[in-house]
Image (cartoon, rainbow, N blue to C red; front, side):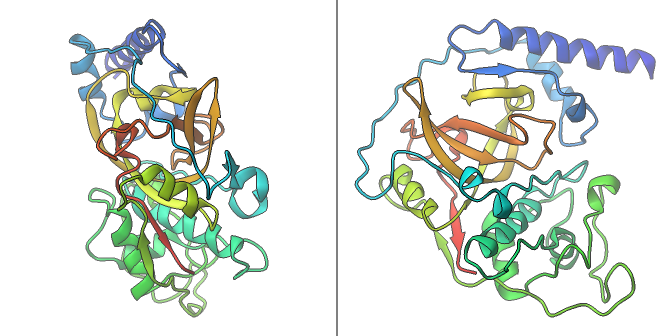
Length: 299
């Protein structure tokens, strides 16, 4: 075990060193201790790509968009932190969609005044009761939203999130954790796909005026090492996809970005958030395809 841990630490250190020396990179890297133990960090793939690194310079073209509808910048976290500044951590469970979508649902209900104070709704209930999904086969964002529309969920105070520690989903509960009766299920309403227009960037910006936007992105190895700055994929293979929540946008030093809430806890990134290149024009999918599969639901 000691030898295995030594090799793992060496791999992380070498990948970090590669990222630190990529010319023109627009973000800072860090070896996160909290990420080493997560089962969704495929160290064997990181090691393979480390042997044959395929680093590239951050030299993509930015496409300017003149907006008449949306302001130059937006940030729900600064505007209303009481409704939105709750960062989930999926732990060793891979159910990013259920966790992210339910967190977004909680945010949106608070923004819209449906709850007088923010209520954290139960991603564990959606994970346990949606039989097509589990910690190893997470849903797409719109599947998780459809479950909230068709079935709904309960507050986390009733059913707390446990899969982050166990890595497994459970049976659909018939009572709260303390044995009390389940409250009435709270549902979402009609789901709108935002990213269907010629200019997805502008569509997302306009949707953000109403509330946060659910999306997904293809996770590459270097994202696990993100600490701060505006992320662009610069190193390693694409590993999988993950759901997240766009909460705002802006521009820094001439580089446009989305501000995104992740599901990896506050120890990762910029206090649990990351900024990612906005509107790079890659077939309307954006950086790491974050502008490709975007949704917003009425609550």
